[in-house]
Image 1 (cartoon, rainbow, N blue to C red):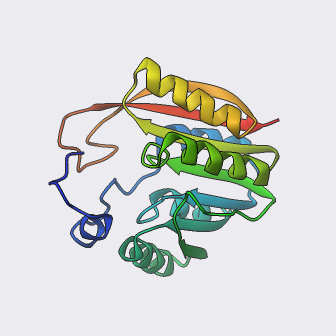
Image 2 (cartoon, rainbow, N blue to C red):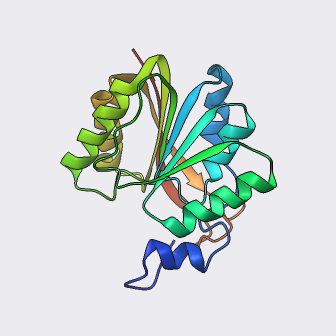
Length: 191
């Protein structure tokens, strides 16, 4: 997705209904069939496309993002659907999750902070995951470097998992500026 320079996340969410699409990632939806509902966190989840899906499945969800605009939209969407959703405005580099997580989602999130900050944040997430809890990651692009970074993130969270290439289509994310885009996706389970 191409944005004009100096566009903030507040601007993006204020000017876009479902800036990254309304539906959850396909790999996340598929992997959740193996996880019993429980506490979940959606990190950098914006308008809540993953958080709302988790809540619909019966998870107790906390949505964390820096954008007050996005969090407000997520709260309104949850209320319209009669779903329970907590929101927290926080920088992921400093976010401290509550222990006992069943699921942590970090879709298009950990490529933004510096590498060391992302690894420190995902280490805290991993420590909060229950044994057998699931970590879902997506990163833009599919290069050797991106795949290696996804594997490093899974390792930092002490999760065993797989890293795959996914082609994101306009059907999955209608606002894509190109017909399709490569994305690195990973699903890991806490050992």
